[in-house]
Image (cartoon, rainbow, N blue to C red):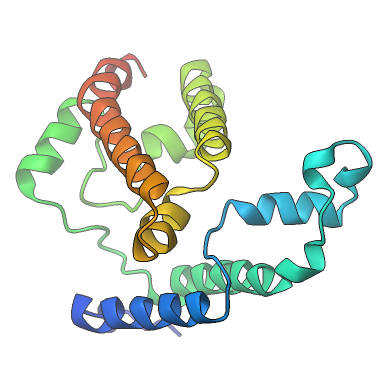
Length: 189
């Protein structure tokens, strides 16, 4: 059974839902963010025996682990039941620009097979891009003391100046990489 007939919820529904969640979290003294869950999971697994950073009361964060479990379950449900076979609807100019960089399935797939397909695991440059990108995201998340969702949703909604700086940095970095780095590297794959 698939539910392809469902379209994404419109912004005027999802925006207020996110706002209600954020106000609720602020009122009960909780912060939203996914990156902190890696620290919690490492603490649960016993990493506190090896590093001071992981020594904290992880039980106070179990609510966030439930959120992560829901995110994973929601992703599985969306992929299994709601994924439309025609892919992402992209502007034709964007699809053509991506195709010029070597992403042949632009506008017809959800993730470019050039980077995430089975063949990407056999190409050393693809692996290098994924590993370096993952390390940089992890480093940036730790350095910024939070991930993009934590800063952009939770930090900005509580008017935190460091979150504004982090979000500007995330977007600037993303624009720089997508405008200059990827167009240089993707044709090499």
